[in-house]
Image (cartoon, rainbow over all chains, first blue to last red; front, side):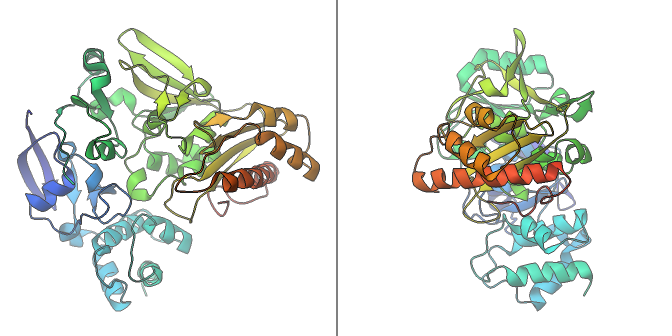
Length: 155
Length: 297
């Protein structure tokens, strides 16, 4: 198959690689670029653990072809500390013991980052809706929702 | 999971180039917009195209705008675009309400309305709203453009009226002239991200006429003309709701599957129709639940 040269920004740095049409973005990030925060979970868009920011919006990197990243601005948790809310969220998640195994954490943090960037005064309904696509099997969501609510309130 | 199938990838720079690829490859070409269905199908071997045609380089497929009383939703418009549009919120709140029930934010940021109706699964959340707004699907091939009413769009489970050498360019919705309000009632196993066990959309008009459509309660999303006939010309009453519920059971044909039994779907069809009608009529008079909240069946 014909390979494609793609150029994009990854966590603020320029990247230029050759990809095959069938390469999945998640696999390319993890396998070739050493970006391990997005995880392989359900691998079909349901669980949210592969979440990355593409042009400022959360997407499922398991459902994107690598070739689609051409020209995009990609941010993964590794590079998200430049976003306004990410570190504040991380501190609060830590304080609230929001995660146990941590497998969902990168996706949850990025989904919460996107939420607060768009809406800095979310209701509990908004928060639940924002993380509804990030499955957590450990903590039952309550400490995750509380941490996001308190981060927004600046507590 | 890697994709084991091999295919070429093209990203046409103009419409003519795109249409030539589809004309040449026909069934062996697959359109890529949000990819939230296509990539799953590629991984699972359900789609085996020779070429994947990325439509995101075609500016004429973008755009969400009201021209006169017609809302044009370009084929690349995502569910998040709909949800964030003040225009949609103000003029087509039922569309907003149904968009909010689609999957999750991370999926809605990529998934398109056009893709939803091209995938044409029986549970397509956008379909009942499009049906009651009497949407028209604009498709284009080398031979020209066709306008397909959404009522003729779905031809079976995962089947549509789209020819193999055509692509969808936009979906158009006409703003109803009469005063109206709507409701999309979705039944799912839990609030949040789930496919519909059943969905019913209602538009209620100030002159006591109604439009009703469903998804996931039959092999394809559809309008309910018999139910509308029972309702039309009448004010809502408990008796009328009973009659309408009897009528809609003649129009749905749900199956038992992993999400629900047939019997439960039939029972909930009655319940959802009643709740959707009551919510729509309440909204008509400025009451009822706010669009997009607290009205999950």
